[in-house]
Image (tube, rainbow, N blue to C red; front, top):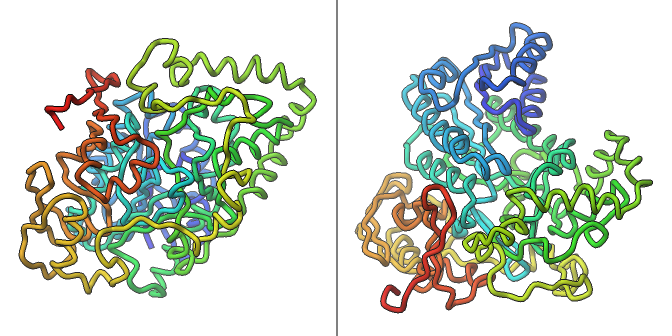
Length: 508
């Protein structure tokens, strides 16, 4: 078995490579490493460890020739490379090159290879956008409402849609949830990204170790002919209830390693009130049933991080006032901090992340899922109690049983129409029309299972969900969980900078 991998310098990729190499029938893994300086050392380490079983290519994933060399004569391609926040927030070009153009180049290379390797694409929970206590559970087929100005999600959405429509022989999309890895704390103390976290954001944490193990299990079981019906589908990678937390919990466990808490280190007004991304997966058991990969619990993994990094124990004896002053107050001044946006009068980002609601300035006035302010916390995390979003048709039907009437119902729920009168293959494009008059071709699978819709309205930028929610019950059912119905705003990028367009009555 010969496998091509991207992203092996990342947390998931590192684990996926190491665990895949444990399979005796893997004769070669070919990896693509970018020209970043740190990858020279990594390349030497990998060659020393794996010898002739690994082949290392150096180059850019956005280079079509590099992608062709990577996938040539491979059985599988595992695409894990990504430029993630905070780098994607600060480097639009890097995000576009890797998350969009690089993914498209890789998909094209797979399509041209004869025979085609099977393609495993790691997508992201960020496509689902902001959730809170009103609809904390989500599943494949939910609307893709990426948070305004989220460059990472913007590029990942467009790349995923391209894959779904490309017509590869064997592919799968895995939407990765929030990921725990050994360097969690170290990686989040140089930028204001942590202040984007909403306290009541439902976050499901899976470890990088389990994520890598999932890749191993897919390759192992598929090569042995042990799984049916897995390919040409979309799944959510989660950890189940043992990984379900909130933004507040994340601070609680993370800061607990250094003897602190959100209350000791933060003020509530420092943290965004909306426009984050995260949810609990109501369908996370689908992959677990197939591959039995969920082993790590969130709380135990945080403890493991503490054991690996003894320096965190030393931080417990440092006065919390000093940590508050010299670490977290310092981060407030970084360009990606919401407090810096307020200082610089960045109206677009401030409105996107805070809205018009009054922000509690005292912790006693903050209502928290984790403290039971919205009902019993353990009961809220039970999938059987989940308030799930509608997809506009009977989504319990197997994909093979879908009819054009299902497509018409789904389109109407999105405020549009299905113009085609029939279809035989749910993976072959048919014709749709959105409420605003754009006609487009997408497969029933991409729309009804994938959650994608009009490529012009969901470009994905500009972010025009206020206007779409007025005509699309599909979007409205979750958008209004954190937005007022009279906001009437379009979020834009003008010359690469966030901007707002406020609609007048005559435009709506």
